Length: 433
Image 1 (cartoon, rainbow, N blue to C red):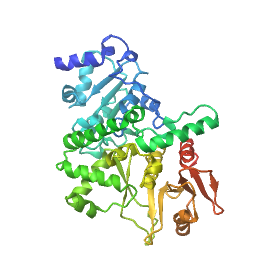
Image 2 (cartoon, rainbow, N blue to C red):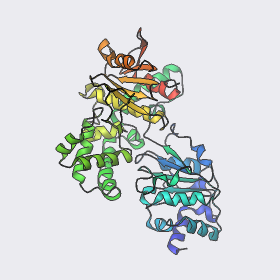
Image 3 (cartoon, helix red, strand yellow):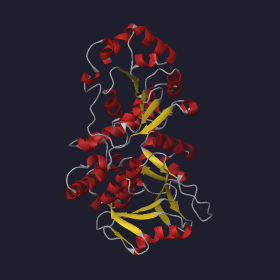
């Protein structure tokens, strides 16, 4: 084993060599979670001979989540793949396991952090799992795990995917106290979540705008340039800002290409990269096989409101004073759905060729949701949900999410609820049942 690598292992994993215990790992190495994450149950990481892929955007606490499990085992091996010496060691899973045997350092769990820096990461982890090492393998990455791997099928049946997104309302609003206290906490947290988003640092910083600005620059200048190999950074950033302005709208690739001065193919590729790296989502339409439905166009939503607001220079603006408050609320409803529901539950939109539209159709036709940035829901706000019922009698619950007001149900069964109440019901599991 290389002497430099051995020295690095002694520094980052002293408990493997009889010096201290993992619970005493420096906070800089194993950051303590700020808030216990409601989105992922870290106890599932204990399953051996299986890869656990923790994916999600930059700076959402993936490393902290992994360490919340690693602190419970006696001898974890932590490898940061941003370190060139560690990357060189991770070229062969057989060689790595053989070196561990020679070291005489038994391992209870292996954590590969920042796996997007490793070429053919999927094949490497496949080799580790196939060797049946007897311990779980945790893998984190800020891009979709297969972004830089040529073989998407390499981990089929060998891995569990855990998607971690920025904080949800359930994670930032206290869940203790009386019902009135919990309601007040949700109502106070919701406007801030709409403004600064749910990135942990943005939520906790006194000046979130500065930190969000750094995050945008890190994504555009570092990730796009170094990891994603984007040739036209100016066009990449222009497409990102155009998407921010058009949240909730159908994506017109030709329009994007014309505005940003690149080809349609380049726009499509750059948007796909933004989706892969969990910055935004391209939401497909629901198609029930009816010719009068829109089936090909996609809508764009951001995974975090704060990031979108930063791109628009409106982090400090209250939702009440913004001309785009409808887009702010619609995007926030989407983020809560994406965080609360298993990633296997489909989220779509529905639109007929005549123009009738519903913002979100979840789980097939189990729930249909409209977001309306109003405090008084009128008959006009219900047209889309009623048109959907006419075309799809099988639709289940129909919900209008508004800014404030008292919850109520219309005579034909459409539920109207304020945003904070909707988010709370979503996390209690009441929406899908």
